[in-house]
Image (cartoon, rainbow, N blue to C red; front, side, top):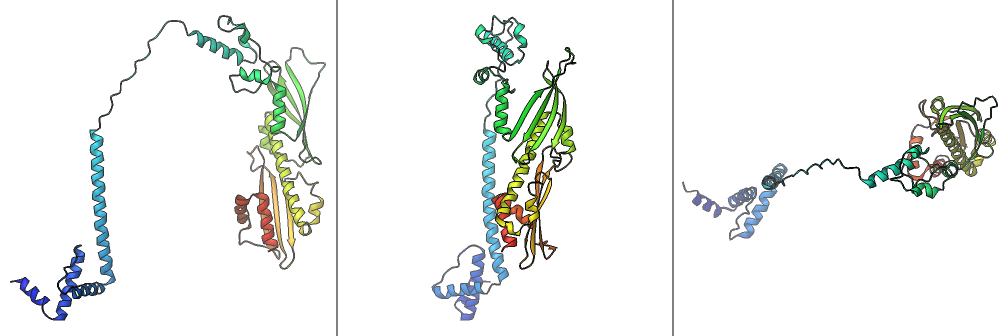
Length: 389
């Protein structure tokens, strides 16, 4: 059967049949990625093609798009596979360089290098506090001008030029001055050596009484008195006793007292405690200066007397229109029994007509503001927003 003649007759036939055939051909050619053939009646064929596309359902259009996307992805996949094959082939054909191990140095029975020996003896001599190597015969390696003794009376530059270790400086006065200047700027200390007439001369243990005062708050300083027992021969600490700690409101953790086997740890913990107390009081003073009328007078009058208490709560009230109050509790202390260094915790409560407000979360809002603006500014902003909108 001659399908060509039938197709030709259909095309030259009626207009309705012509439109139907052209629409079918247009859809078929689009699926195969081939543009439809334009006959002499170009306008009729183009309009038939568009009309055929409009007759497609949304499902068919989506299927066409998916088929086009699949063909595009297949082409990309083939390109990537070819690239992988090319790189694999290049890697297999790459010749690795031959590794030739270096020969081990031959053992030599000759004497050690003279410069190395001189440097080693120099290091051993200068790094020893007690100059334990002074009895060694080092004249062949160490010049006389380098055998000078470095002790606590030596100048800092002289000691640093000949220092080959990370031990503290021997100059005790310089160390104490730097400690006071950078670590304990608000501490006063007095040291007194205890004398004992009945003390055994063969006993190398000595007692030292130390009094320290942390004076960030000059009206209510933290005072500490302790006794140190140490061995004068090897300069080691034997015992450490805390005799007095004032005011009594300074609650040191039991674990902190047990772990304070050296005065250094104990002084550092108290210095941090004093710093946190002073920072808390400065924060309260800043709030009082701005909202004094709305703060309980009793809190203001007893502010200094309760300076060293662990927990302190400030209440700010605005009775109009809904009797809103904000409670600010700042605690200075230890987070748990294992902690040695004190920390500060802040908690807030917002009440309206005596009922605590749960939503929004006032503490969550405060911590979010604090990350962005800092402690003091965040607290002022929160007070202004909640009490005086």
